[in-house]
Length: 595
Image 1 (cartoon, rainbow, N blue to C red):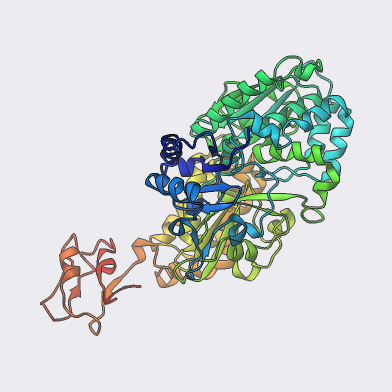
Image 2: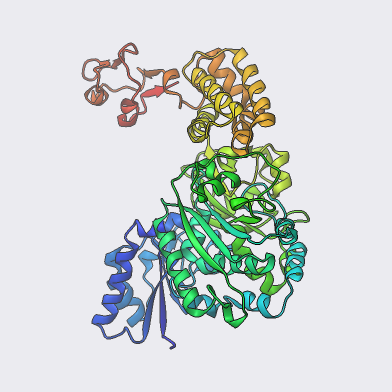
């Protein structure tokens, strides 16, 4: 049935937390009350990506794009836009220069993106298999079942140049070929949805917005290597993604895309969801497989690799969500189509969660080889509040910082490695001049120390030692010898730790020492934090030439560290000061400074 208007409401976790579900219900009610429900359809989609501006409502066919929508706006959307055909100015995207952007094609945020993995997110109802089918869903599976030999599938993946999007960038075709060539009475297919990097939500959004793409890909893999069982390992903290996977699995079985005798081909394949408890180490494939087996999630030495000996000792293909989401479109359009995207060694696109000190935070997808400058300034809109860009952390706690000197570097696996960082799963956190690189490094080390399984001593002991040195330095008790020891420990962990968590945990230390050793030295030699972040090194003062003696800072101070007389400059006693910063925040005359 064709409708006059299709009203798409963002139904990702971020927008749902901002009452998107209420917006959806209000729109439906307004249409029903005005007898317009038969002519207009409201659809709850996945994430549009522009998370900074959510909740988002998009109206087709005129492509109107509304941001920061509230439940009470539903009435205006129906009465003004649907009935009278007038766009609602107050809900249009404001670029910041006073100009309004009416459609998605007018937004800089989307202009340099190229959506392959996110092709359906924000376009379809993820809980309706028919909408996935309408956008060529399951055609790749049909092609694999009836037109292609298993060897041809692997060959297309080889031609495509697809590499794993979970961190290491291992060629996908090679992993599949290992499992395909290993004889066994049982083989398994596993989706790693245990996304744990701080600030990362790529995999979650894909599963929330397009779960069938992952189911189709896993089924294709099963057919290719001779597996009849698949597992999706997803953290229990993702209830919406889990719900949509459950709905998608049930629908796929009902339609004959999953289960026994798929599409009457004689091929059987089933998928089961396994919930993880949120252990970061379970993102490592051998730890993840152990968790699926009901054991404690701890890595084991490799080889043998899971592709040869994995789940319950059987050959197992394990890829992350983003990698799986690429498979159907590659096989539908052909490996050569995909190979034309990206760079010579890093083909295709990459999804990033762009967060931190950035105007337009959100989920983006760009061709490999796109520069950091394009991502941060053209797509992300630059650093807000007139602050200077300082660095960007890629790869989460396993990655490193990239400075402004390398903003024009094309982003791919090799270039990031040269800069001392990694692609990782796709977290990208922007930092400005107010961020302390020593403090940022301490944050990441605290995370990896807490998430270490403790099995190997290089990670268990080395990570804790690095964190202790960083805490010592940020407290103002560091020595120059501490820097030498941190470099030594980082080198040892990289070579001796059992798994990637321990091997890459020192990366933030290594990269910040490479580019910002002067900040470490300022903490150690001058007992100062240049960014003013490290609380124990802060000193507050009241500038007599700027203080008008209003007394507001004295009233706000929780410990009585500020004293003085009205209309006379006040004074601050640092022996009493707890460095809460309230005095600086409340002073309208910028008389209180920290240094």
